[in-house]
Length: 264
Image 1 (cartoon, rainbow, N blue to C red):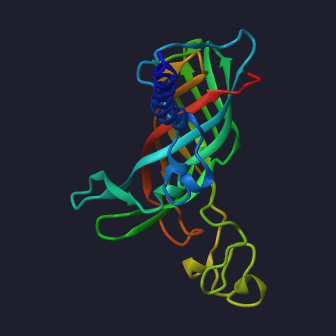
Image 2: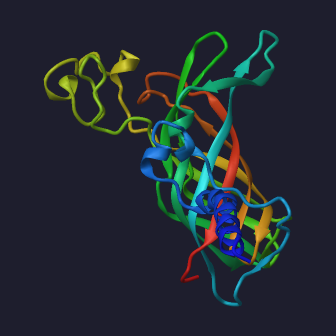
């Protein structure tokens, strides 16, 4: 009888030892736990067993928050000697800084289907692909003003969005190259090189804005948490260095995540 209090204390200590790691694992990571680890560039995930559906309110919309686009593979189109073109895998040398998010989006019914529209957030990031021959291909990975459509009346694991987006210039109009040239500012704009500006291509700095296309496939939906995840494939041009070079066609494959906003 006199050992019962001691056994109860030992049992409580054992249970606390086993329970603490589980509780710690659920706690959000601190800044020091994320810094310099690359974890900030990883989109959240949804369980593979989540195969539910989220209905779109009649006459309403779904507001998505924490939308995340994580690039996993970058491929650059090249022309072979026989004239055929193929995509060559490139190394993303800025992979820990290329993930887009958090982004806000909206899903609304339209023409018997669904429309996904990106409305706010970090929608583009500069990155660089390194080709096997060490050539560097700068690009601005973007989903800016993405508008994509899909069939159906609800979001489920068979929902596939397709649409277009804008790709802003890799450099802003105030960017100056090593010789002080820019599209809106710079030495040649102020006083010099005006006579040769139309004859020498690198002098003709332009503000580049192009378009890209994206296919977004929803693979997992958890109605209890409002989370959804899947994959995407986008095709967009690389940077032209403000008109100084021909752009490459770049294909980006990666992971997608989003969840319903609390006020949705």
